[in-house]
Amino acid sequence: MGELDTAAPEAEPAIATEVFGDRIELARAYTADLVGRGEELGLIGPLELPRIWTRHVINCALVAPLLRPGRVGDIGSGAGLPGIVLAIARPDVDFVLIEPMERRVLWLEEQRVALGLSNVTVLRARAEDVRDVPPLDQVTARAVSAFGKLIPLCVPLLRPGGEMVLMKGANATREIEAAEKAIRKYKLRDVEVVVLGEELGIDVTRVILARTTS
Image: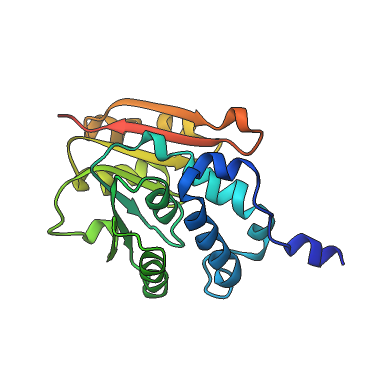
């Protein structure tokens, strides 16, 4: 009984409607599909189901206000966290979801079509191999790599003055300290940690922001 309870998917919290507004039905459809097939497809583990909304979907959606109208890349998009979630929350932004694994690319394409996300392009590639893509205004990533390792992957994809919006854990400040050499090498500015969602009573979202030189 205890094991079944542990694996039970989290019910949609009331805050979801506030976060997604009139896009909530798309968020529900995406989350339901992720709950239904995510474990089978290797996108999420069974321990993630009891916190699928608060730890994953809403956690990603909180980043939406940091995005500007333009083109945003999501490195290692995987299950679409945060790329698909942000594309739902911000229909005014164009997203390029960069993912090297074929089965994940297929999932992302399925979601793009099923949810009618005309603001999404899925690109099968490793970030370091991306070529012939117009410079991006912003780049995001979640649970991909340490900040210092992401810097050389992100900067070549960004336009001058572009911005990294990287979702991080509790060690975000330490990651910035450890990346001091890379920050200097790539001449990044305005590097800071922003904490989102403290007032919601759920896991906060930590984001490292950093801009390239104009």
